Length: 310
Ligand SMILES: NC(=O)c1ccc[n+]([C@@H]2O[C@H](COP(=O)([O-])OP(=O)(O)OC[C@H]3O[C@@H](n4cnc5c(N)ncnc54)[C@H](OP(=O)(O)O)[C@@H]3O)[C@@H](O)[C@H]2O)c1
Image (cartoon, rainbow, N blue to C red; front, side, top):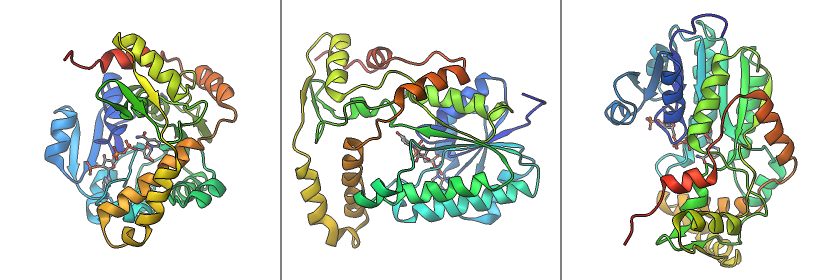
C-alpha cells in the first residue's frame, strides 16, 4: 500500500461477499464506509466499526456523500433478488458507473470489481441470461475509465456445494453439474478483494478466483459426507425438467416478479451445467502466485456447516 488509503468504500458491503470484504478490511486496520438502502440491517450485519451511509445507488443525492473523499473502492453490488432483478442493468451497471464517475471527480483512483467468473456472451445469449452482457459493459467501461482497476472473476460461492443438499443426506443437482466446478469460500473472496484494493500492483488485471481444486458435485457429496460421518447420496434429476419448467413459465415471467425471478434462476441451472472448464488449473496457479493467502478447503467449510445431530 503506497500511503494511508483513508476510508475504503465497499459498494454492496452488506451482501453475501461484500460483508467479508468489509471484515477483511477491518482486520487489516483500514477504515471502511458502506452505502446501504437499509442502515439498520447493515449495522446488524457489519457491527459498529463501519461508517454506514443510508442511500440507494440509483439516487445521486445519496451517492455523492458516499463517494466524497474516497480514493479506493470495492464494488460487490448485485440486484439479484425478486424485487430488483428486472433493474439489474440500471443498478449493477448504470448506477455503479455513475457512482464511480462521481468518485473520479473527487479523489477516486483505485477500484476492485467483484464480477462474474467469465464473460461468455455467446453462451449467455443461448441460455437467455442478461447478466453477462451487463457485467461485460461495466467491465468495458472500467477498462477505459482511467481508474486503476482490477476485476475479480468470482466463481459460484462454495455455498453452492451445500445449497443442493436436502435433509443433510441427499445432494440433488439437476443435470448433475459440470465435471469440474471452481468455487471459493466467501471469506476468501473477502480477503482477496481487501488485499487487491489496498495494493497498487494489480492494475489492469482480470483474475479468475479458482481458489481450491475444482470439484464435481458427486465428488463434493462424497467429501462432505466423509466430514459429516454419514453418506450424502448424490442424485442428478434430468436437466430437461427445469428447462421445460422455464419454458412453461416464460409467458408468466413478465407478469409477476416472483415467477420472473424463478424463471431467471432456472436459466442459471443450465449455466451451472455448462460452466467454463478451460484453463482452471492455470487460473489456480496464477491466483497462488498473485496472493499470499491460505484458502478454505471444502472439508473446512463442511466442518463449519456440520448439521445438528437428529
Ligand atoms: N454470490 C455468488 O456466488 C456470486 C457468484 C458469481 C458472481 N457474483 C458476483 O459478486 C457480486 C456480489 O454478489 P453477492 O452475491 O455478494 O450479492 P448480494 O448478496 O445479493 O448483495 C447485494 C449487495 O448489493 C447492494 N445493493 C443492491 N442494490 C443496491 C442499490 N440500489 N443501492 C445500493 N446498494 C445496493 C446490497 O446492499 P443493501 O441491501 O444493503 O442496500 C447488497 O449489499 C456481484 O457482482 C455478483 O454478480 C456472486
